[in-house]
Length: 150
Image (cartoon, rainbow, N blue to C red):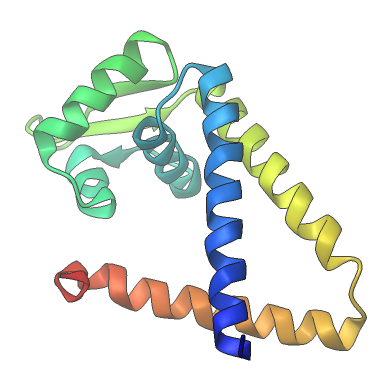
């Protein structure tokens, strides 16, 4: 097996393991992956954002966002408000319960990543950091134009 094949095998394995980790955690929290993704977007924004922005970032329809928001609002993970200057715009704001779930999930995942990263020498961590930086940039570019995924 060559180097690229090994890397692909590692990524496939890690992806499945992280999926299982998140599935376990989210089941305990009573959330689906799309609900968690929505809460993560709100947590990262740090402020109330329009539902249409969430729809764009998640690459799902506005009715699909409404479906998710209805359940999350009922469970008090977020709240819906009207934009102060435009009543047609609905804003979403994460609540403390939602923030706690996102922080806990991120702490769990980042704990594994950072613990493993600590096993490497500083020069190796630098290379790994550059790799993740480039990977993040490449993902941003493809997600900005999702039609390229087809």
